[in-house]
Image (tube, one colour):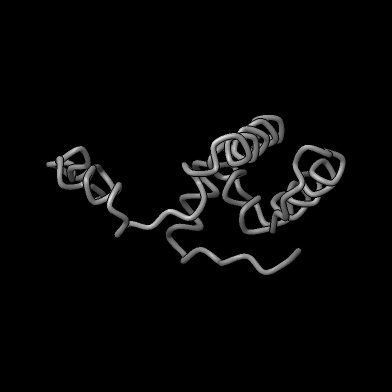
Length: 115
């Protein structure tokens, strides 16, 4: 397994409890996704362990849903690169959207204190 950022104690516990994460399972699942990725000729982008782990976490370690999300991500990145590549928050286009008030902070925090 390549280098993956470790979660702090409480976050690791939350991940184990809510996302079905376990260290050995994560290593195994990351390996499975790498093997699948190598067999996908249309996914000709590199993918590292940390990115795979992020996809696994957002699917609660569902291998099939992870494959689908990775496939969708790279397909969109290929078909519409301006959405996912070379994003500059200071570009005129992004600044126009921000100035229009399209992106606003949420008024309240969730149960974990996030907005």
